[in-house]
Amino acid sequence: MSDAPFEWRGGGCHCGGVRFEVALPATVEAQTCNCSMCAKTGFVHVIVPESRFRIVRGAERLAEYTFNTRVAKHLFCAECGVKAFYRPRSNPDGWSVNARCLDSLDGVDLDLTAFDGQNWEANAHELSHLSREPA
Image (cartoon, rainbow, N blue to C red):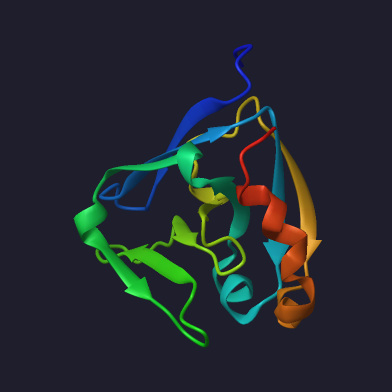
């Protein structure tokens, strides 16, 4: 790992049609969630500010799914169906990347915590700091 505070890392969907990059520090706050969506897909959230995420290939292949309040924009590859990232309702100014869709986690320490998404309204405030730029 370099001395830089963030290192750009690549990732993507199963078929490789959608590729992204995310800038991560050496230690990353990540969440597992028990909501109906995450429990069924095994999504491991790494939420980052807008400036630390970019789609590098396949934006035209993305399909969108919304439900309930329609604020979260669940994006998935229309070819293979994998949701590698999305716009979370808790952090609409950032992105949530699925840590399982990164090419490698070598040199990254995932600090995993459980998030109670089944009681989302009572707990969403716990995630708001993750899409803010570091001071």
